[in-house]
View 1 (cartoon, helix red, strand yellow):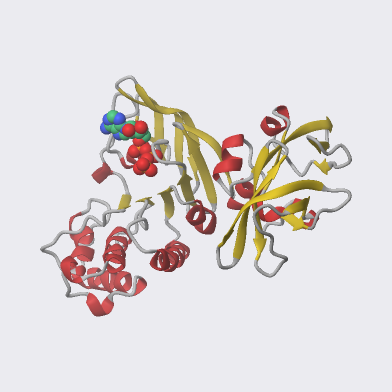
View 2: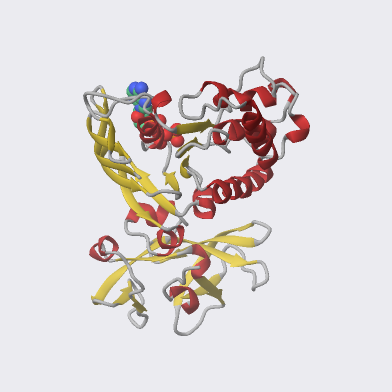
Length: 355
Ligand code: ATP
């Protein structure tokens, strides 16, 4: 549905986006994930039509909507946006906000008053705000405001919904609840969603595909499961899931021996060429099994241990590396200074099943 072809964006001498290529398919939920300043919002603004690229094309359904010379502005694209800041008008009630696009948007406009009322009622029900429809923004909580912004965005049934960190102003519990609601709305409406976030949990939980960005470039585009279990680059390995990158040697094409432990060898479970070239093996913190020192095994020492409720987060010193290890609270506990052995849980080294 949408093609981003060789897009670059310069601000003066600064390159915010470098030769991006990406396709968004109809009805899919794509999360754009990356650290602060990597260019996520710039990409979203280009998709919205707020600015021209420095080079490249953006194509919506075969029509070029942006290149270096021309741009189709936001109001002439069949899109809606939801921002972190809600962007509500203080003088309008909840219901008036949701009527607005049906009266004024070029694409969402509906002349039939009855049809307008049905659409508004459906949107209010979808976000659970029917009982608050006569309130003003100043009389709403943060979560309720974000629901109004969401209802206003979906009521014209846009072909593309752009969301920029929509949950980051909400508290942790509400964020979890809103994740499910946004997923439910996506399933119900089938709108294509491009969702910017720096929160890997949000991207992993909600998206069909994740675009991981770093320093203005795309590092990897895949399903959440593949991003997590088969990271292609050093950046993706450490940014998503905080993998430990064990140093060692790929002694054959599918056998890795970690430095200092010549009797141990791990199989190739789809490790990327970039990691292999650098003689690294990614091990996720929850993949380790922590034990009393064993005769054969990787020996190390507990540096510190943090109680997290459901898990204990250990920092383990092993050779010249510091490793993150997450253990269930229901397994044996260790304290700083304890000698330990580490091994890998074989079950999670198998290729991931899709579901
Ligand atoms: P965050 O998660 O902090 O919002 P982001 O990934 O969305 O970050 P962008 O807002 O896309 O990042 O910004 C990417 C880079 O481009 C940043 O270094 C930013 O300072 C720069 N930038 C963005 N807009 C402009 C502008 N109008 N003029 C100059 N530099 C800009």
